[in-house]
Every structure is written in C-alpha cells, then in structure tokens.
Length: 137
DNA sequence: GCCAACGTTGGC
DNA sequence: GCCAACGTTGGC
Image 1 (tube, rainbow, N blue to C red):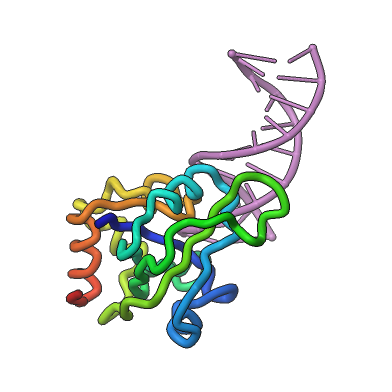
Image 2: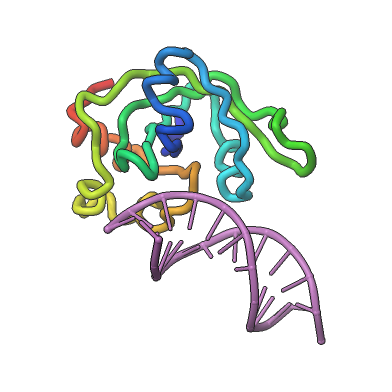
C-alpha cells in the first residue's frame, strides 16, 4: 500500500464533482516525475485530494481503482493515466498553511516542490494529515 | 497580477 | 553535454 497526493484546480475539477461522478480518470499529466508516480500506483493505494490555486487545502481521499494505462488524451509521447474512486471527504479541510506549519510534514513534496502534481508521501505523513483533518479511515 | 521555482528546449 | 532562454505552475 502506497500513499500519494494528487492536485486539482477546483474550478477545473473539484472534489465535489469527483464525489458526484464517482470515478475520475486522471489524465493530461505531462510531467515525467508525475507520470512515473502514476505508474507506481497500485490498486487500492490512497491519495489525498488537494485543491490547488483555489482553496489550497487537502479536502478528501481518493482510491486507486484502475492502475496505469496509456493516456487517451495524449496525441504523442509516452504518457499514462489512472482511475480513482472517492474514498471519503475529510472531516475538515487541511490547508497548505497548516501543513507548512507542521514540522513532521516539512519534507513532503507539496512543500518542497510546489509544482509537482502527483507526489508520494509516507504512511506517517499520510496519517498526520488525516489527523489534522479529523478523519479516520 | 506578480514572481519564484522548476522543467524543457535549443543553440553552440 | 552545457547552459541560457523561455514556458508553466501555483502560492502569495
């Protein structure tokens, strides 16, 4: 079991819409590091759903439903997509500012490399964010 | 709207 | 293969 953070701009694709649609195809990723992270995902892995640009907070949890396959939106190049299903909303959102102020989370890519859209985190970091979000699995 | 950080491109 | 220029992302 691996843990991840995935980013989405809520005016493009929000967590609420994800809850309504019940499945999300994560395509359009055009960054090698992010793509490699998508490829490393296994079925059942959990990903925190972060709202970038607007909101700037972790709002929910997604679960890997279908592991990587060729990105249908890629006209050329070697790109991958995965499918997620919702795995619940956080009790309360966890803002980036709080994450930055939490010493145990100082090492995560969300803080260190703000531009990466799909990034790993370890179990302790995942649990810390769930606790901040007053959420139990 | 600005700008820092990072990735990619392309000339040499 | 280096590095300057440029483009994009995303926080502020």
